[in-house]
Length: 88
Image (cartoon, rainbow, N blue to C red; front, side):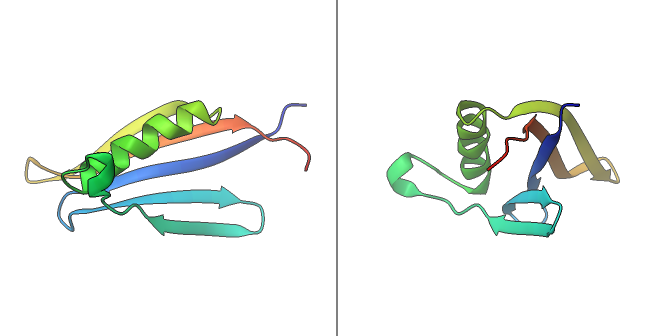
């Protein structure tokens, strides 16, 4: 049976912050995605989009997106990814 691993890229517009969240059997790991001016990032959203691009190159497939809004204002965008789990 195929096994999967999952991760999430989240952009929190209220906090102006982007996160990578990795879900593993031994716990959850969170990493803030920092803006990198040398890579052309203008803000936290560019850092998240750059990470989304690199996840595709690492074999991750986007499987879901969601938006949480408050009073019609976009607050949090989430991008869920999966890839086949390999035995290490």
